[in-house]
Image 1 (cartoon, rainbow, N blue to C red):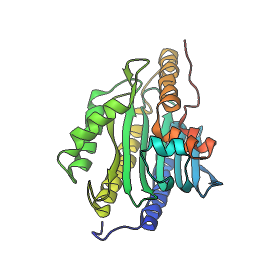
Image 2: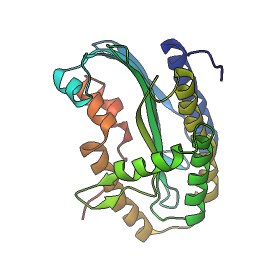
Image 3: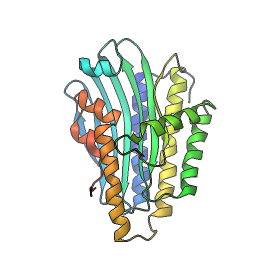
Image 4: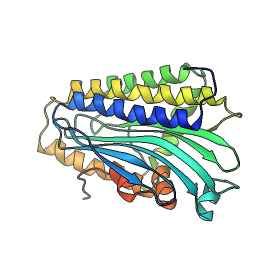
Amino acid sequence: MSTSSPSRADITAWLQDFQTRLCQQLEAADGGARFGQDDWLRPGGGGGHSRVLENGRILEKGGVGFSAVEGTMSEAAARQLHMPDPHFYATGVSVVLHPRSPRVPIIHMNVRYFEAGNGEAWVGGGIDLTPIYVDEAQARRFHQQLKAACDKHSPAYYARFHQWADDYFFLPHRQETRGVGGIFFDRLTVGKDGSAAELFSLMQDVAEVFGPFYTQLMHENHALPFGEREEAWQTLRRNRYAEFNLAFDRGTRFGLETGGRTESILMSLPPRCGWS
């Protein structure tokens, strides 16, 4: 990308375009359904586009959400984010895909950009993979591609972000990790952690791993055999996904505390899950 400093508008426009391109890739790979779009406005300022694919050939449910919101957050939310000024602008894309087959992993991705009222700006994001049945070779390939994206920016990033993901995607009440991990990073701040151009480029490179990797996985795994036992295990394992997103996910908390659209915030939940 250009070494010139990207503006808020540049980053927002790229994220909107990325949402569109990713949905096109996923529709082509699924071959059985298309994304519907629900446009929404946030009363305090901004809005977004929630795109959901349901009952596809490979994907039972997939959500790809774009948002760009601004305004004033509550004092409690500002304290949680250690912000001296409650005014903010936030834009990002969030993706969660729940496939039909227990042989195809669940996957999640988020990339985001945030500006605080005091002028501080930062990026965050990550990708993690949650197989119901782990394929070691595919898990290694996933991490190799994430490492390659990180290494373009710093040889220290992958190990740091990989450990961050292991710590973040953990259910303390279960003493379980959510899947085979991935990478996670938050509040990489313009100036302290790199220029705006450098951090935006990192965010882009991480995001661009998603489509090619996951559509290949869809192609490789969707026709593998499974039966009622595997489906029952999938239903049970999906409950861990629901528990994490409702109890621990920072994006869910931030969206609810800043008056975001509930349906868009919760589109990451699995279509079906169970507890026993």
